[in-house]
Image (tube, rainbow, N blue to C red; front, side, top):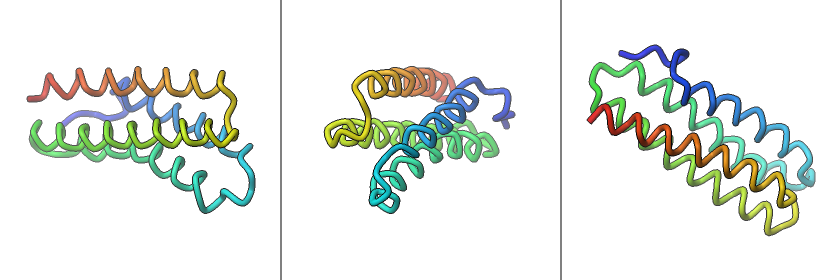
Length: 116
């Protein structure tokens, strides 16, 4: 088992969630149950799956949870692009968030490869 709090991918993805919560607080209020909820849930899923996977007894199981975390990251990226298309996020913030997300995704993917 791994200590998830010691994993840089968990720490970075947790901090990324804070950024998502902050940026979505500026979205139109009518999106509260739409894209805001979707973005927040998908973003929270990333560190949550890393943490849950770290408790598994096998590296194969942990790798599966990391795969799910990567899938959630792609979901967040798509939702950020849609939010940008709708004018909810400016280009600068979109690029910054997507760059952070790509870093998390690459790190998670590399870490996952060490488990298999």
